[in-house]
Amino acid sequence: MEVEKPGHKEMLSYGFGFFGVILVWTLVGTFLTFYYTDVAGISAGVVGTLMLVARLFDGVTDIGMGALVDRTKTRHGKARPWVMWMGIPLGVSTILLFSVPDLSSSGKIVYAYTTYILLILVYTMISIPYKTLLGLMTQDPNGRSMLNIYTGIFTMLSTLIITTLAQPVASAIGGKMGWSVVAGISALAIIIASFIAFASTKERVTSAVRVNNYVPLKTGLTSLISNKYWLIITLYCVIAYTLNALLSGAGLYYATYILGNTGYFSLIGLVLFFPTMVGFFIMPKLLGKFGKRNLALAVSIIGIFGSLVKLIDPASLPLFLTGTIVQGFGLIPIIMFLYAMINDTAEYGEWKFGVRTEGLVNSAASFGMKVGAGLGGALIGWLLMFGGYVGGAEQQTELATTMILALGIYLPLLLSILQTVLMWMYKLDKHYPQILADLQLRRLKADKK
Figure 1: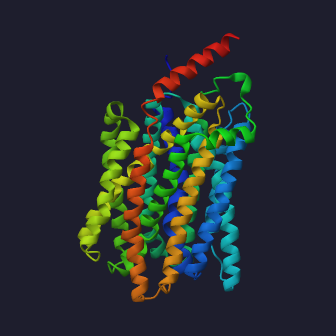
Figure 2: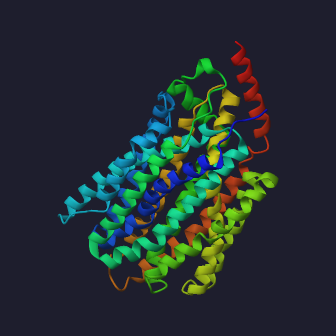
Figure 3: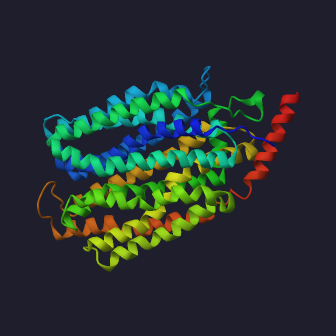
């Protein structure tokens, strides 16, 4: 059966909207820990705890937001309106986050907790609907994959802009003001991107059983935790985003104290995403032949060897850059396939249990992402504290240096292996065509009644 899917212009607009969402995610995930410890003067241990506590709280709110999206009914749909409503609040909260005032130690901690929790609440209120929107624009598997690739292009672009330019721009301006300016520029981009995405996209997908569009929260959660493929992909999110947080968030410390030059971080950030840039040109041609899961599994296996290359000589810049490129293959599924795979589990849940909950599927998977990002940030703060790290110091203790090595090499190696095992367990792709055909048959029967 024919499944309606968006055109390239609509896909482009959707992808551009993701540009703004990822700007915040990358800015916070890559630089907030460093900003707190080395610019705002908050201790690493406090920052580590803040990262985990706030992200766990954020994950709980994800579930509530997913349920709210499933219950939203407007003439613009149930996900698109949130993209428009939350653009400006997200921009404002981003500026506040990177504007810690000169207060006492306790005052800075209170400000950090308040503004960080505010940001993640607003971020949840735009990111969950945005991810849900992908599943509502089409049920066509190739259409979803292409949508994910469009988002991947803009994810790549926004990530490269932040990782390569944020630190040099902030340093050129100097001090706290430099980071406030970077946050302000990001805020403007967020607002523009969210309004373009709202104005240029369309929701097309409805439940196969139209009389049962309302799903009680308890029923939705029960079907969710019984959905084996959702459980696998959510655990994958935890592992993959912990790995991503370590590779990005700990990279600045590694460049400064192991490689000896903070300026190397921009180069590290650039080469980390080189495989993904190449992937944009070849993955669309390979999708139809091999499928999302098989491609994701293959590049995940390659990514394991990145840490092994770095282990040859951890202080060698050429070897570190080479290992980083290899590790970059493991990030391809996050950027190019993950959101499409998450939304595919919504079809499996509807087929298996008779209820469709795109909002809950995306919000609960997002919970895994938030937990992973929070755990990665917490590990950075806690291990640095354990090693006796002193923010801004020219020299660190031997134990602190060992902890930076663990964050940059040993933990990523373990996480890369776990990520690969989980992707091997995810085998929904081969069942999806039959699932989609069955759902379309149910929809036709429902329309005749």
